[in-house]
Image (cartoon, rainbow, N blue to C red; front, side):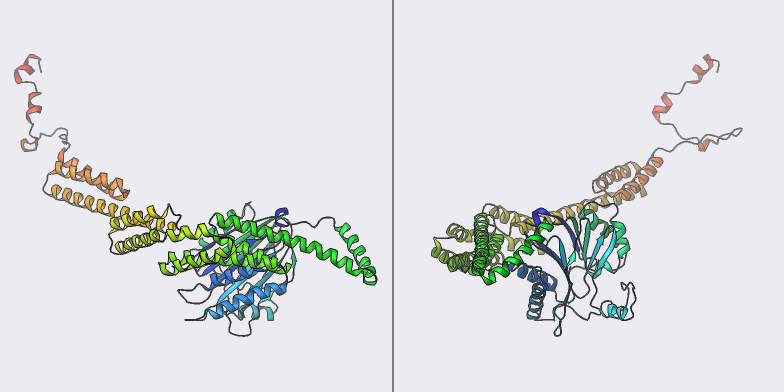
Length: 548
């Protein structure tokens, strides 16, 4: 397998920048013999549908259904995504800019629609950069100039993009050879408009892992300190080792001999050669089909229905190629049952319990046709429906209380929901956990605010006592307020109160000033002594005895 004999490492990040919603999307898959990476920037204003996510998932769905590195297949993947976006354009026209890299771990093909880009670095320098399908790029190309169009006013005026209503013509490159140590960067316009290829190359000098590289590129981007940071996606692929074709010279001679044999077999026993080759292919497909079914069964038993669905789909495709109707129908039924369970889970998470129950019942019924396949899983899900309803009600109550700012009540409801969700491995448990964390954060924030208000009240009481010259009480109030500010880490307040305490101390315990030399101290300026001070002073007779 090519993947096992190569080493490709991928790291990516995709952020919303200054915006609430991230319209970018990136995903990839690495199969045994071919891999696909896709980065997309959504260009429309639809708030409910993510055109970028739709496009990426459509590409990878078709790719995994029929993995290929042919230009024809890649165009089909893109056309499928184009159709998906056009069909889903209900409120507004869905549009996206896309870059795709498909590799067999020794070569690659790049496809572009719009101005999302691929940068290919070799030995620390730029080896290849994809071409934008924009008016800015066309103007530069027509003038035969090599200019940076990152700030060109027409850089976002795209001549081609996913979702274009007519004359959609994506660019698909020829195969390009990869070498050990190559680095590929897929990115959207939110990144390359502010970070140049020279900076990308410079950032490679001190990094060993793709995670370090993407983090460093993000630092460069954010160091621009723009008032508005657009959505941005950066994906780095480190080609540490490419797949090596072995025994090339030997293969060359084999091909020459095979060519000679074919000529001979055309005259004589061509049918024998064809049958032997076809038999080997059929054997390989049979092993592939059974492996996919076995993997699918294991994923199904573990409750990982998404991966089981993919394995059954690939197994069914192998059965189709084998023209094996028995296994094709068997895998199609397992695929159908798995899909029903997934849809049931989604309906349950959305609160559509009747729909969920129907899906589970249907899965159980269809499972009876193939030795009660999935019976235990579906029966358990049906039995859990009452618990799921209780979970949904508790979450709904928690949401209501959260909106009403009754955070303690909301926390209690969410915790109740999660307690019921854990024993049945409820799919929506992570979302409930997130709600609990958000509520706890709100409660902590409120407690902090309450403490700060209490501290402000104490400080105000201290100020009032100070005004009334009750300096001892003022110090008490200031000290209590200072302790609370220390707990809430308001250091500026702590320092401010420290000064107030010192002032009150100075007023409470004034330091007497000594008389100037050669001057008598007026009687009214001599501070009165308290009883303790007078008791410690020597009498006149004692002073006379001492000759003083």
